[in-house]
Image (cartoon, rainbow, N blue to C red; front, side, top):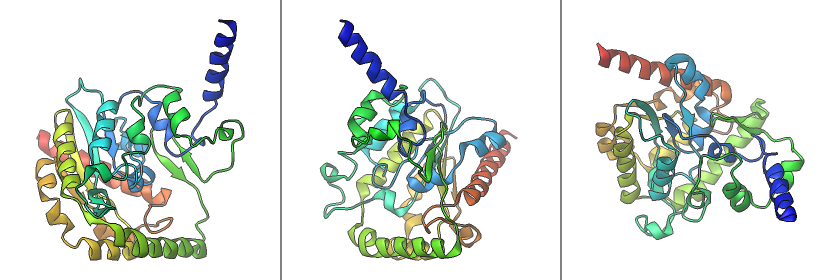
Length: 297
């Protein structure tokens, strides 16, 4: 019993060493169930800042967004959202960000759910998403990089307690252009060629909105991106707005910010730099505030 207790205490001490530098996802699985959520991929994870929504709307909106690999719309993400949500509320706010890649599959049969890319990743495996420390994630999904718990490496990424993934990198124009060109090349040679619209994922987008509608207001948002990235998305899915029409119809409102693409700064063309993310977060928050005010008049 003594050695078992000592082992358990030692393990607890090791796990308690984690923080926002541990990895880009862990903290989101250590916070309590939430009344309000931001849903999406890495564009939302890096771009939308809950502190800004708090300033404008006077409420905490937890960023529960991940990546296009881990959190496209589907059963896995919806079930994780259900685990994270407080279900005794009826006045929540849910910001669901949308884009072509989150309703697409990277397989020959885009509607074969057994081949969905997220099936064997951490959202599928992490069944408990509100415990701190979270041994289930750390033991199964930290990729055995436990040395990061002891030796904090200098990382450009820091995951805040509210779920915002802050990225601090060199924003010199040459560095930004190099990252943009690499991202464009990757999307043209990889993502664009592998992707196929999935009616099943589109169904899960609608199912996710319908589920969240039971607990509050769902605001659908398409985030801005670099004009060169926009060209790729338009080439891939030129009728995106009409494809998600049903999702728009059942939401509280839809905000398309791609008309402002050229007004913001991006770290790599795909993700908003944090200063631009702050501006975009304020735009969305004020849009929601205005809609709520008008609905209450």
